[in-house]
Image (cartoon, rainbow, N blue to C red):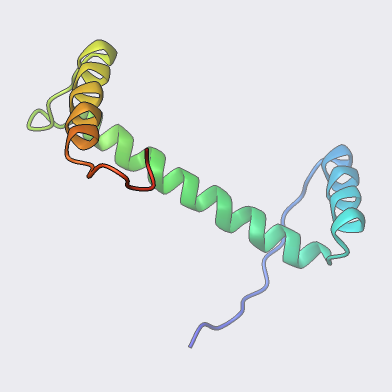
Length: 90
């Protein structure tokens, strides 16, 4: 079970005004908006951290945009050829 903890932080008045504006528009309390924003930020940070790790991992080959698009086009062509006639994609 998660235990709720109380934290406090000092923020600039313009940030508080923006927060209050969003809370009013959403009909939500500050705590809920802050929790959601913090959760979103931490998830985005985790994704960024994974990307940074992959960029520095010598075993993870980097490819150019052109190579990526070429591979995507080849995969797409293969999928189109294997689609049966009269299917929903026609």
